[in-house]
Image 1: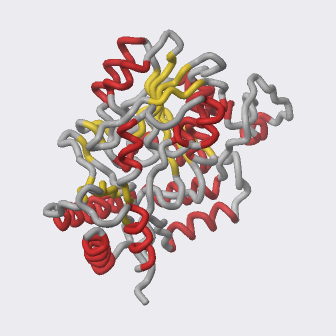
Image 2: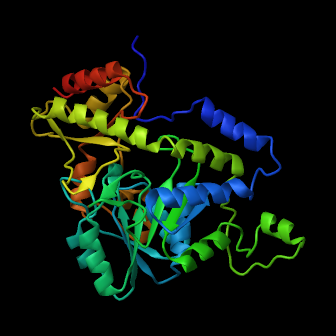
Image 3: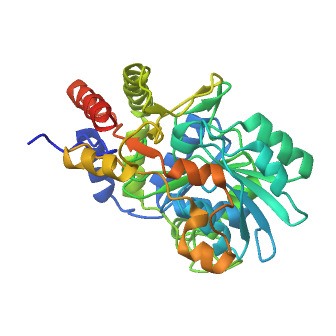
Length: 380
């Protein structure tokens, strides 16, 4: 039986293992020097002044909402075609996520929909760089600047991507990344926020450490036990050995993103003549980093539905997935925020037709050819 090809997976080599082992043998397993080293190198990589590391991408997103002061009564505009955390972290701060629909061809947030959703309560807009393609940042920034709103980039899919030659992570007021194993680099679980705003960075450092204004390393260096809780925070700290892994992985990012693009190009070429499905559109002014490779099924031409195609591909060892069920259709949001079908029709239609195909750097040429063959046959 053919081996199973997942939609994504981590790449770990001996350099990664050795980097982690060195920290495990050191004096600092958490709140130590490796965290700052990883943050500094990450900031340099994306062209930001500050980077703050967290225990997960969700924690990173939550920190952005805390940093900009979201509280009860505030509204934050988000797209529904995203993972739950994008909207959930607004709710964590007692804010209200307001769903703005996406563009049909890219599934990125539609700037025209953002404009329609702005009210006197709107404080921020979250752009999700869905699948690894940056949003139309010029259009969104024009709106946020005109209305005095904060722009947050949810770039958990888009490390290594760029928009008009500007690296993702250096464009929005704050940008969140994820280091989950299926992402471009991994720390097991982990996340990062980049920003050029020193005040935001300082607030996030306190937030990840219970709201305390110093950490154990700082107190050790000063020879004191005294600390002050100046805000209500969480334990969102990342460990030193996770950051050692992240630092080792960061050195390989460019090569891995290049491989993802090569796989995506082969998919594009193989699927260019297909009428039963098509890949998402890619704008000419972006450099896509392909966390996901998503196709849209043309259900009007197919004799079978998405579920049958999905199940058939999985049964043949092709680990396709679906990203995502629109957030506003989830029971929690329906029951507590009054959302439901009809709110974001483009996202709802796309959800019925999308499938994510395997794409990760360690795929072999044979893996790619097998995915191509099975998808064309499965969607026939």
